[in-house]
Image 1 (spheres, rainbow, N blue to C red):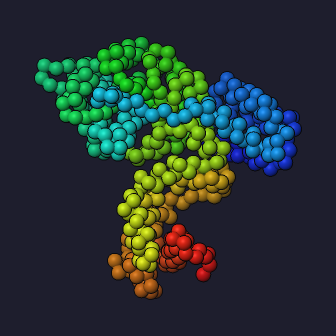
Image 2: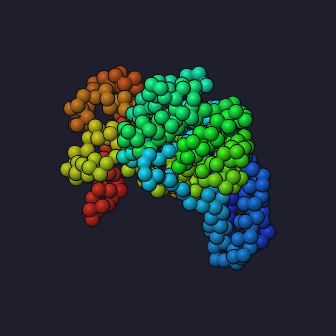
Image 3: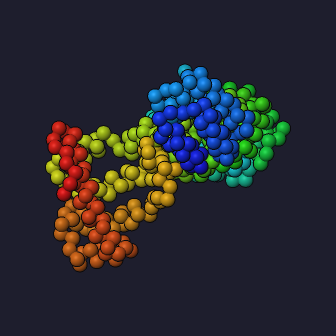
Length: 447
């Protein structure tokens, strides 16, 4: 997301920060470049114009071209205004003082609403909650079954038409079904209810009337519109229409990892005044992240997002496993088995190109031409799995014949095995030096 905008703004930022002084004309020229970059990223025209005017007003008010480091001042102003455009600060989900918390998801067909319902339920489950998914899309063929499959994948129960009590709501009554689900949630101790509502290919009166009725009957704590980030300005128009006819509380942007422009995210908040609460960053059940405007602004400007990177790392491991790794490093017991475990934890954190975007100075926009080979991690995993337990624990015993066997078993070449063993020794040496440095010992890079 924002890959194109990152590249353009990154170039503008480098030009600004590389100069000792700036004239007012140079600031204006830079802002014109920023405006073009925003429009190319599919940002709403009015939103782009307003953003540029706010940046210009702030820059003139602070007379940045007279400062010691005017380029950095401009970047700071752009970051602040981007953060403001994206909502200012992260908005957490409002939880009910008396459970269950009811979250109504609305949106058109094809935006990923059902999949997002499962991801959101999984997000609550990882935080110790007991969510319930409710299938109220009763007209689209197989919609209920799709939610049941998604619920099974994330380990969350699904309330469907067949679960209604005898004499309860009719199978074709989505409002009555949702009300029955709330009663069931109270009885079974579910503290979060995520309702997957009906959708349409386009907004129509029947859909909006059904959603308005459901909203009035359930009084959800959050009514969130699911938008496809790749839809661009169509997503912005959908947001405007839904917001005009339904009391929305915010948005969830799906497929954010597949949109290189990102204009919808920059436009939807400004156009509607409603915040983005979550973004979908992949297909995995855990690929849903809370939306932080300041962090996203930093990513757009190529400044990284260390906090999200840390959160992903913490989610991929535990304090106990980290302490065990440190103990093995101290005792020089870091083996290929631990190396494989560390690689798997990195893969759990998400695609490598996403992780690069979070490291300051290492965004894809700044590393143009460098590709991240996800397949290499799979080949390394295959090679290590082709080793015996003794070989993983004692790589020094892996001679020529063993290397040929490992290569055949993993579908790789002997040169690949040689490269892996060399890289492992380098990683083990470096990790041990880092561990010693952390304990106050000497830190040396070298052979």
